[in-house]
Length: 87
Length: 183
Image (tube, chains in turn red, yellow):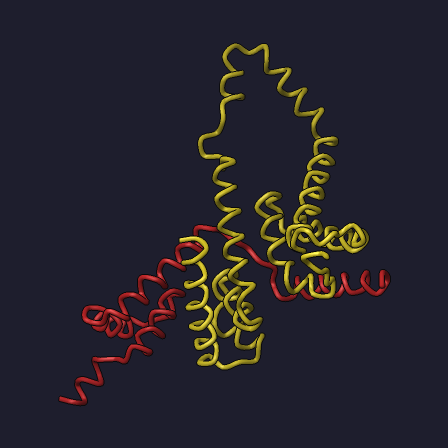
């Protein structure tokens, strides 16, 4: 019985970890089932899922963009040249 | 005494993404946006003595970037403007055609949409600024750039479980900050 429980039931931390992964479509079906099971009775998990989903949709809606690491490094290199000239 | 100080050596780490996001939403061309951001940093460096410290560095940099964007469009228009006017002029003789040409495109981004997106982008970057550098980098790479776990782990030399711990901390801090500043 205990084995069955640990097979199906997950801790709050694990539920949050699965929730994070599912924001990037990286949670497996089995993980999602376990998360949903905990979601039905755990208030903390429900609050975390709600907040996490809200953040994902807000960032998506904003269409924010950022520089790629390489682009930022190139920019830094060029700027440092100018900075040395200036100072 | 000025309220804000100027630290050009930290500009790229602190503001390059914010300025890039601001620019690309206006010029829709990644390469051009990068050039404009670079021009802005160089121009700001040259006019550093004009920084009075009344506004924040970010506000001051944005005001210079805005001028750069206006100059960019002025340049484009001075090359293309005449040809476009001529095309419109020729079509004037066709009856009824002026209506379709002049009516606003309903699917086009309105000024209000741009403003809301700007404010949202600003709120996101303000919250990102408050995160430790590593958390902000991982969050940007995973959530904004959409890179896969393996690529980020290889680039930052971290394990997958380490990445998920960082992501969890970043997401929790971001959600709390956005709750205060936006939701």
